[in-house]
Length: 226
Image (cartoon, rainbow, N blue to C red; front, side, top):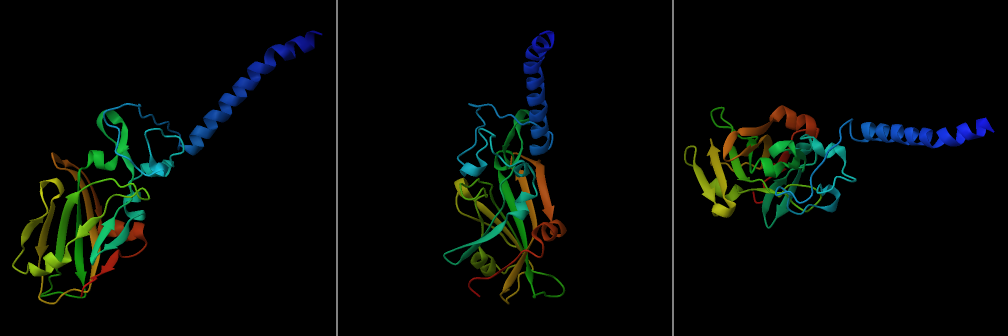
């Protein structure tokens, strides 16, 4: 009788302890030992994302989305009406107050550097730097494409030209160097920089070697209108 009373008394407590232990194990393995919180109703709530990467509630969010490697690993080329652009992988980073937020809430501008392949003049390789707004997309957890204005780049063959395209709400800044009269047929992405326009020291840079490593090879694309 005494044994039955002791079992009835301590069994619920043991069950609770076991459940707590299993829960802690699940958190440590599924979230790499960290628990993330994002308060509902915050003024920093992001614009709409694809459901798979909605972080207003972190239920079901893949913890791998908290690494900047996705910027290159999920990057892809996109084409539209004779234009070519690059969409980078969306990931989350810490913003104001250490809260997890969209990468574009921290870095509002993105700059990419491309080099021409197979063409050089006096050992100088033609290059272009394109700077645009960093904007989240609702498609596949990617950032909105950075469109590369190749036609405008080819037409600006003076020494090291700089020019802007678009308006203040969607301005694309371009800098070109060593452009030749031979139109390159192929280009390589050699650098990516995310930064805050109000404080450029707040930035993240991905260099050519890292791009090739994360992409698995050179990140190249063809001119659609050679």
